[in-house]
Image 1 (cartoon, helix red, strand yellow):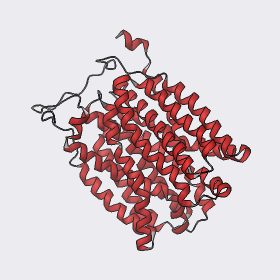
Image 2 (cartoon, one colour):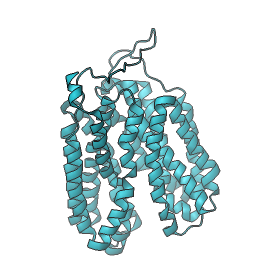
Image 3 (cartoon, helix red, strand yellow):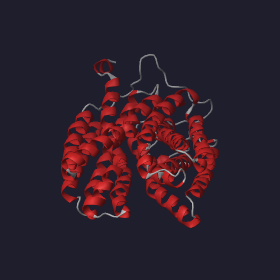
Image 4 (cartoon, helix red, strand yellow):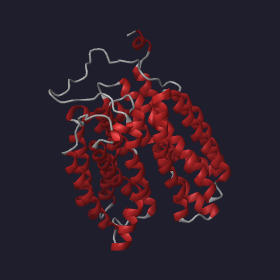
Length: 408
């Protein structure tokens, strides 16, 4: 195809990495907590509100962004997301002295901006790389998991040198330039595109298959809801530990908060590497088997390592296994959506599936806190999470590409 010769599909991957590294600032929120408490008297609970709001509106933004992208293409949506995220950061520089102001600027505007921008490189790269969906999706979302490694130290230095307001202003400009700049490279491949030398796998004999499902058709499929539950369990298990890694280190391993905080950067790196490794493995081993392997990694960490983490190294190994496994869900679930329901409405379809992550992000921290309060030990929460992981692993046996039975 002439169009294929004009476009280097790897350019989409490079742009995706730049964009996702910027969006990964979402995981660096904890860096702001200390200065907000010290300068403006935020309580621990109040300091969590902007972050929780950003997770919720991240998921909400994905739904609207996916619908818009499927109609207008990825470029406009990515640029809009970058502008929204940048505006939210800049406005945070003005409104951060108040909890409500920061919830609106960082949580609502920033979260929506991340949601609008996040979906575009995933859907775009999957369409350009049908021959290696898992690998490329893992590479595309690697930046989001690893973004903390860049923005964590950067935010620390900026806050120390220039204060919170200036830090938010600088971040806003960086987001507008980098996210909008990277997003301007995105475009969908031409209709009927397939890489040279690659042919799609033939459908199973005698089985009615449908290449592309509309969102309504997908939601009417039992396989969608099975996939939603699997995603919820996987995301909740990871987010509960990610959000409580330092308290677990303090309570179980008897670490000081400063020492425990030092392990978070390594956990963030493993989170990013888990996206690359599991995405690539899924192209060879298969998506369902890879998801089952990720649940098995969780179970090892929750049963054998973290409850018995009486040293820094055991605690670090445990949280890194969790981070590594969790990263895989962010790589595999977009690919599974494309495998099961096609790529025509992938942006919107994955947006709906991503609500499982949003619900997990909101409910996970409350669940682990509730279990700890009710039972007196955070280790009891790990055993409860293990039950969910075992159930998720079992459900994987029943997950498969659905058979189309007519419009809903």
